[in-house]
Image 1 (cartoon, each protein chain N blue to C red):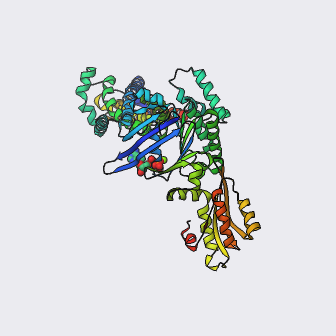
Image 2 (image 1 turned 45 degrees about the horizontal axis):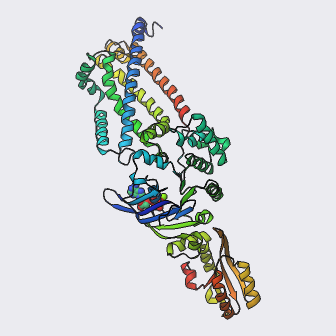
Image 3 (image 1 turned 180 degrees about the vertical axis):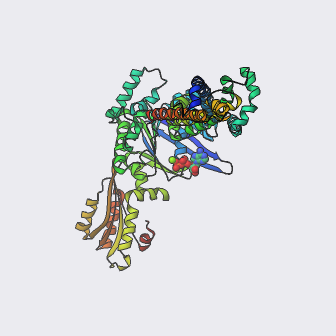
Length: 223
Length: 357
Ligand SMILES: Nc1ncnc2c1ncn2[C@@H]1O[C@H](COP(=O)(O)OP(=O)(O)O)[C@@H](O)[C@H]1O
Ligand SMILES: [Mg+2]
């Protein structure tokens, strides 16, 4: 063991902390992005032409915002957004500061995925609900979100996995976490075992998310 | 004729869809009144505007012009919340059932009651009662994906009844079902009409469906109602080519004429032979006609095709036969039959070739 991963064994505490930092960044940015992504996704679907609450202006603004944010490469977003981060959090380094770019990096992606999931909800079912006198709010919650839940869970898994990837990139601006260790210690000091173990821990996280997510998706899906 | 017994009263309805480069007049100048308790059919080919027209009844589709009165209420004057309330009195069932895949069968039937003042226990009890009514009590906890098409439509019917509607609109509800299942669904609708008094408006492209349960029918073509009336009347005396077409398809007369045309040549007939088409309505029966022809006029009848139906309580039938014998005497018989509901027509090679009467 000591021969295989000598540097890691000396940095157990740092690894433990970095793992927690990655979980912390993933969890909180996922939470806030989920709210924003669901909100945007639902709004995009109901305000689209022919939608439940058709509103061309709202739709076109949201659509453009999402497209714009999705077009910015994350590594550039990290830098570009730092004044906003500084304004909101008071600093641009550390795990909490990293939440800001992570959220802006992931929620537009999630919003699109939610939008697509909801567009897959059968128009006929929505029409049936309308014919039964359901209000737009009732249709959003009792039809769109309920019928689309299986797909929403599936796109959430994909999103969280992408998000774990983004947290490692945030290491580039000193966010902490496994990406930070892998680059600023493992890579910089040529301590390959550090990079390698960081990767293994991330892979374990990804698999865990995938397995739990698939299990939930299966539970809620009755198609 | 807006009377108190008209539960649906559409006046001067037009619906025009404008897409970026074209306008489609889906419904044009349609008046439609449906009496309370009726089973009213609307028949037409795909694209005729049937769905658009019935979606106007609950204002899922706002008409470009015209007024919509249901149960004496002018729907276009209602506030959104009042309109939603009014919609609960006009339920719909659809060709593709439109059940919610994420809810159990019971959950689907319970759906229209969510948000009402009913307690959860009462909602479930009512949904269970409706499932029993449509014969699916034991499927309460399964999901729609596990049901057959006919069962899904029964669930959809139970769901449609949950809000105690006055009107049930069926938009091609049997078009995705096999003939046997279609029959059972139509029987169920008939029973609900009789037992609950719910008025039914039924869209279809099959005359067979109209024939089996409707009392009145409107024939739609290119956004307009081109013919309407009692089903027995439209069936026996269609006034338009389209209606005749629907009737002939449903009685298989068209197919029969084509089949006969490929096996029989009128040119080879003897001088005392004719190919004759008969149409019976009311008390006259095929048997009565046949025995009179052979006994009184000594005419030999070789039946090539016959189809007898019951429409809205009346016997209706068609027959095609080769007659051999005294055609003069036959003509005497025809005059006597006229007012007893039997009409005849001599078929020519032109009829056979064209496949039409
Ligand atoms: N939302 C819509 N936008 C544009 N055209 C439509 C819309 N709904 C229906 N139409 C058109 O209106 C016509 C009638 O359609 P529909 O009422 O569905 O006919 P049917 O139910 O008799 O098959 C068709 O030409 C159809 O393409
Ligand atoms: Mg249609």
